[in-house]
Amino acid sequence: MPVFRHHPPHITTVTRFLPQGSEVTAHAHDVHQIVYAGRGVLTVTTGAGSWVAPATRAIWIPAGTVHEHRAHGDTDLHTVGVPVDADPLGLDRPAVLAAGPLLRELIIAYSGPGSRRTPEARRLLAVLLDQLRHAPLQALHLPRPRDPRLAAVCAMLREDPADPRPLAALGARAGASERTLARLFRADLGMTFPQWRTQLRLHHALVLLTRDDPALSVTAIAHRCGWASASAFIDAFRRSFGHTPGAHRALVGPATTPGTAAGRTRSRRRRSASPSATRS
Image (cartoon, rainbow, N blue to C red):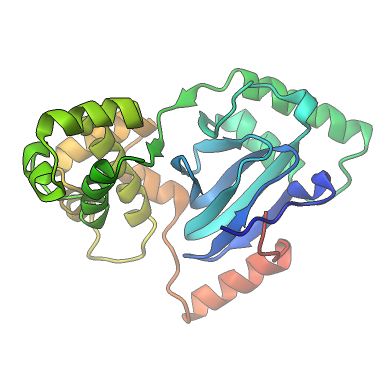
């Protein structure tokens, strides 16, 4: 895929508005980057898989990593470039980090307008990096399979996360035994089949929760994502994100339907406050 590399590195620090469904094309940076969605839900995709970040999470992207962004719901995107020699995490692949109130405010403040070269900005970045060192890693990575048989199974489930078929039945369609696929999930993706499917369903639920659709109640989303009951969905969601789906929806806000007066007003307001570049 095409790659765009930013020069100079400092322009990787910015705040911008991404409308629902917008994408940032494949690119890489010469510096590390923190990506945070102050509103909405953001997915970051690389050749190794995808990472998802609601407003209580941030994504760490190591320097040189080719990646794409996609906004689910109207999204306030905050990005912070981190010099390579100031790496607080020592990770060679993207990761999702818990973003507590202080870390979130630091990211928002540092990515806002103004010079990054002042003593105040340097102190702000130093505190931000200290907070990152203590931010817990979150298991919100959906790895991408390499084996074609495993890829076929994962593609079926991506098409319909609520597909209830067991691994043996899915394997029959993909031309592989249940035992072979179970081994491949562990060896290729680093997790079991139930763990991967739960991650996929949680990713899908996060996307659905951004949609301004009266038919998408918490119960409806639970069924669309494959949970047998709303209570089972709420329990799994709370364990992963620390709050209920209903609280999450209130936090990130639904996408505004394009073309409505509210949507046009919100878009004008956010575009006037943030750069409208198409790459980050």
